[in-house]
Image 1 (cartoon, rainbow, N blue to C red):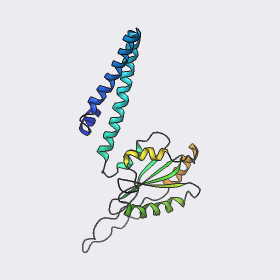
Image 2 (image 1 turned 90 degrees about the horizontal axis):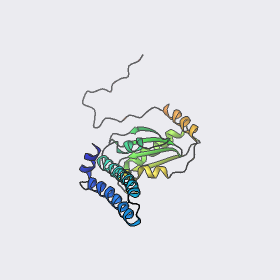
Image 3 (image 1 turned 120 degrees about the vertical axis):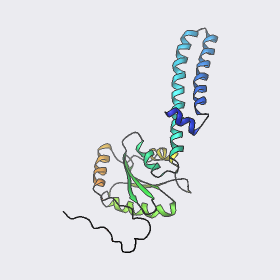
Image 4 (image 1 turned 135 degrees about the vertical axis):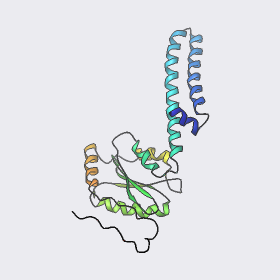
Length: 208
């Protein structure tokens, strides 16, 4: 299934995987013929070829994933949730009527707010969300990142790497403590697009 995804994203992807593995095996075979340790280096070459092929396969699969997610709503959240390590991701903590989104990540750097949408619109959302989280986490560093292809934004293919480069300000127990405090914040819901229909009324919440 992953090979089919790679083939759709890059028709030359799987030939590159096979060529990298075969090239590694040929290199060890030549070294074995030159040095006289043919069978020993052949065994090592087979193992090395498998490792090289899997590494190249994994890199191409990741690139195919990025290309499929490019431009899709929630793409940044999907990338953030696939990060390894002690990262607590809460998708869509803020959404506006234009479907611009802000995601919240808690990790060793502190609190990271990641937006999706044009910079002219999401900057105001990031500022508002930053003020909101600082009410319950005054002593925790808060970073804001705009994901996208616009000027000053981070492409989703580089989003994980950008977060990994942030300074480590919290220890593991503090990450869980901060995340639990932030869970108590009410989630902002998007307003429906367009005006209300004539004679329409806003629904009232049911009282218990």
